[in-house]
Image 1 (cartoon, rainbow, N blue to C red):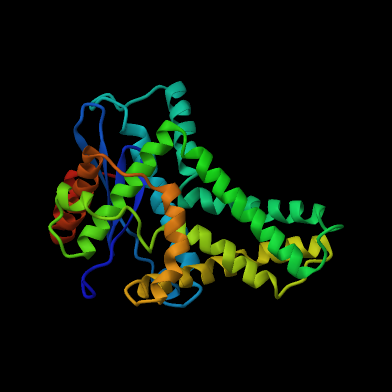
Image 2 (cartoon, rainbow, N blue to C red):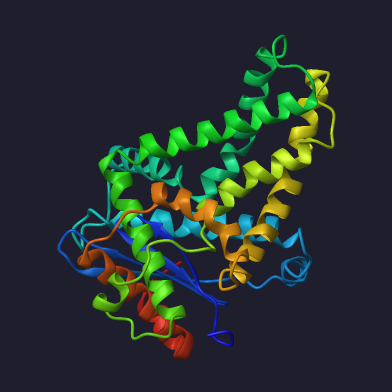
Length: 311
């Protein structure tokens, strides 16, 4: 499959989004059991295409681009997944409530990761500094800070995974991975074949989140930890660097996944996905397959996109 197109995706409310080089498609299960689609064509900006070819810079650009695309598709799924077809118009109160729902679920996605990065980066700094009378020195402080960051990440993911709506999102996340794994294995994309695949994948954004913890820890050894204000400034300035390096690490682990010994480099990210994915039901896999198949159809026949929901 080395010469085949590379696809990525994101779990949505009662659905899955898949994206290729030019097109993105979301399929969601409506409350009447029908499947509805949303299409958005990527805007090809020359400057972004050039930046996406530069190592370490391309990761930040790709993350921002994914956040923008994800928000469009999340809005579609949030507006329609529990509304009877033909009754999509909502009153203001219902829209406000639905917006809160969308924002709550988006916390587990890439968009919220961007907005939460400052808090996720700085809260461990302040907590670690409280222990500075007992844990002194750069090495001790950096290790403590990184340990707190990892603990916060795992605790957060664990508790939100207990909520019913997030559990279903994580099931669709698993369905997304299974479809990609089935496609990359060169198998016919059927419910049976997809369900036989792993719900984990090396290119997952969950792995990326974990890599930012370890990459950040490594980079922090090269900057001061005192005084506190300088430590805070350094952490903020290093955010794009951490994101860029983490993206390259993610790409490297994916490239090495079929090489004995080196494949284990990606295992920590896969372990984290045990929290961010769940085994999907057949009907959820059907939605993921529908999304992927529609994307492939649109790529071959772009005129089909005009018949789908779009901006």
